Image 1 (tube, rainbow, N blue to C red):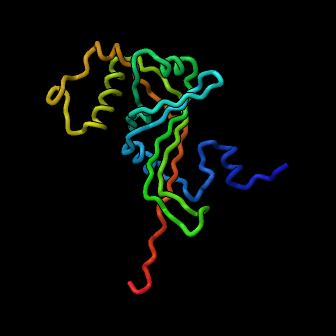
Image 2: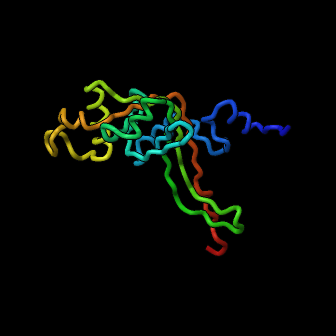
Image 3: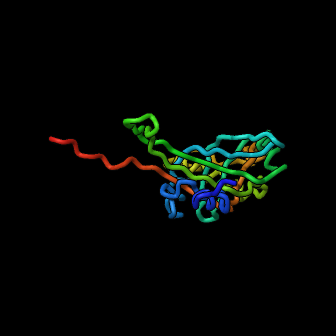
Length: 186
């Protein structure tokens, strides 16, 4: 039997805890900032024994601690959420490439968030509008409904599935570049 180190035990006890604890974002505010800023998220669903990953624009509603996204009114994502609401959501960014003296030490800057929760199809029209408007406000913050574009209408709500991911647990991690050393003679 193989002995587990502390990091492996933490991951086994809490699947949201990053294996590399030195890269963990311990502050919920830092995780929220990434969810507000990053543009694309990936929702992992289960189709029987087949994993299914759906990339989407998303909006994090900090007040309700939910992630909203949408798809067509009918389709695979809706069917899978209705069959099994358990989801994993992730978003990430890549920074600078970090060359090194050895192949093993090559790396990159990055930051990411992983969320575990339950997705549901939003049925309430007020919440549908709230989720969709949050998406519009995130991606088009300088445009305003009724001024720059026609507000959401009922027909659009009927053609769209809006989802809310109820967050049960999350984690974030990042790897910033090490500080640059001053060159000799500089």
